[in-house]
Length: 222
Image (cartoon, rainbow, N blue to C red):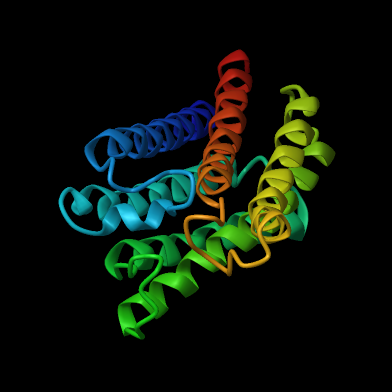
């Protein structure tokens, strides 16, 4: 009975992680239609916090945080050793930063004025963008060594590779834009970071969804 309860809790947490990630992506997609003034080719998703319907994006970041928290709960008994627990713990810490990104609203990308809210948001965003791949690698490395993991291991490495490629591609887009137009600067209409930003976020969530789906399949088979 205790084992069945444990499996049920894992399944419920995995299902909730999937639901939250899908909700995040759905809201983000909706905002592209509700706020067409933000050109997705060079505007960041954080800017959807600004102006009308901005509350949707301010709620959306905590939804992402909760998807990571439920993911960590679902996988806690599946990972082995310090590395796996460290990766899931890292995700738990990331929840704080995602809530921070929702609470502290960013400036428009071309607004260089200094504000506490913008500074805190930038720190929170940078932490999530740059450390998600590190935490996910710890989790994947642990799962591939775990006898408790019965789902396809190629899923783990495929989506882990995509996570890293998406982050590298996001930062590379800045260098590529400046190589094409040396006067483009760090941000602006000629620095095409918008779609790489969106693709990176999409892949981060697909990583959550695929791994949580694999976990649900394996627990149901058990």
